[in-house]
Length: 621
Image 1 (cartoon, rainbow, N blue to C red):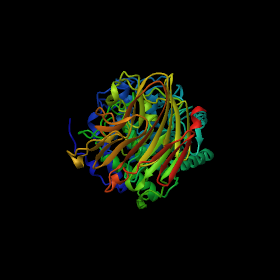
Image 2 (image 1 turned 120 degrees about the horizontal axis):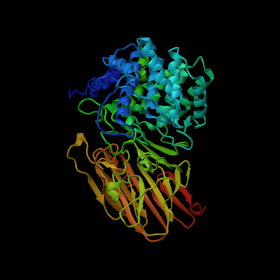
Image 3 (image 1 turned 60 degrees about the vertical axis):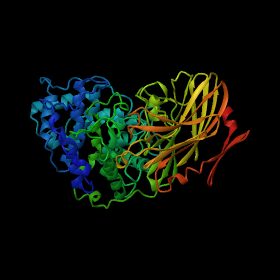
């Protein structure tokens, strides 16, 4: 297959012209991967939970998220003729590449949203060029979505998107379906701009890059027909933006957390939708900087293969962390961020001067994702301390994606590769326990939790007769973990710190500086340092070299970890965890370990001017 020069890595992304070029640099290498009938895009041979045929259709549809706004903005694409031919053949029941009859909870319902998007933004290029037979085929095929059930989560927006497309193209549409689905989505609304992605579901990236993205698209298209709802969606998005901005760092990176991280630069799709819908919770210059820095950061990562194709993974190709619904074409959902391409050159966004992030607090509590976020702004480090959830889902590595003690834009997080030992389990930012059989398990859900200004409390049970109460005293570069463990069986435990990447192209061949003794474990490299200190308990620091490809950001990592063993009974463990980017005086903070006093009735943590008191009576209530 033809190899291409990855020009996108050199794209400065400063102007509308640069953004248009970026869309083309991503989609045009796909020219060689369209099927004979142009109705499938087949860019790999890995599998997903649905058939290869559906995966090929997914690849076709996801490209539309980039091409449609391109055309809506008056630009052209050399592969759009292929797309139009594919639409004609894919919706023709007599063609060998027909996309087929869909059923309840069908993956193809997800992909239909892109066609609603196209009909809404460029009906003159999607609908008008078709003859009567082709129009009937397209309408009939898409209209299937109004006869099936979809999952009770962000999926409810997919029929809405299709019907918005029908309405924009002057076709019959299901008003009742739109109303019913939007009313149901309203039931997921929590407050302060936050939704859950379903009933009792997680608050993750599906809030910004799905629920708010589609809500803002609706608000723009329906501002005259449904002004009350459109205004409600705008107001909620503006509220949400005030929290979500804390997930982004000054270098453009964002917090890796939750599932579907293979969609990468969709992290900034929410901000593009805000601009498109005319919502300005921050200045256009600040939002412009946020979006473009995020895209620049991503395009510096090795996320494309040598043919210019997006891969499955996060900061590098990685199937270990992938979802069961990640097919080879799935990552192209990230193209949603390019909704900006629909804005004409004269739009104020393009005229605005790119600005840095606004002044943000060093520490902020986010009630609904159950976070305390701490920012080391000058070093570009963002870390979220996390309470977790009382429920889980069946997606791969849900515990790693939602239940770690901390998530960091610098260190990322790790997922287990297998179940034998600490190296395969890669238990960064997590306490893991075993029965002495080398099969460790960490926190999968919580029994109870609370989030205060400085402390996250979470109670969890890795076994029926093991109860663990954990207090996370938030901070950066240091935070403190206090565990009260009541165990009815003997246990081995490992309390893992941040996973430090072992390699960096700028510092090729650099070996880690290590400190390892009875109280301290530290690994330091020119780009960062990670360490642990045992304060109370019989734990021994160690360095765990995790299996390759377990971490989302770095293929090879070392995890400073406090390890120990416990006989049945009640035990208190107190460990301090360190992690931050390197600077000239980086290790000056390493000597400033938080001070912890354990009294009969309370625990007092002192670090600089901060003093936190945790009453021990909370253990028995």
